Image (cartoon, rainbow, N blue to C red; front, top):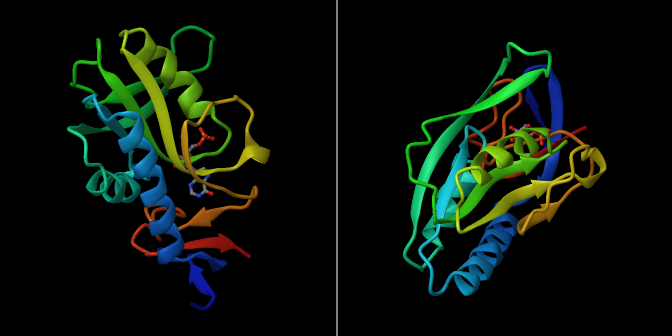
Length: 177
Ligand code: IMP
């Protein structure tokens, strides 16, 4: 794997497809163990999580459902700043064992705004799985229950993650030079 250029920026190989697969399998093993007598509902957050969600879900061997949502932020009427809404969340949350599937938790802002909305619907339990986590970038602390990799505070792309729309189809994860 050599250096690649996406738009105007150069990226170097960071996590290989094999390394990613190993950690996705480990995360799936942990979830399979913890949910052995449950029927979890996975809620994958588009766009970035679509590849991780698909690969993870294939490795889940308990009865499970999955749905895909998009989070959109808009300015509320009040002066409280941005409000996050979930588009496509038609599944019944009440009483379900919910697992949120994220590609990366960076500042934690997105999830810190979205989680209270889900809790409001009284799931039986609410856990988070994320492929990547940048602890140095975290502003809003989020507990990640099932984590693939802890990474430094550098921009990454590939395996579902994009730089300005490109790079999602790359099988490995690359890091900004
Ligand atoms: P947060 O709200 O700051 O935690 O941001 C989470 C979202 O920002 C992720 O779901 C990604 O879509 C995007 N993001 C954060 N860091 C990166 C990165 O290094 N590469 C690509 N997307 C990123």
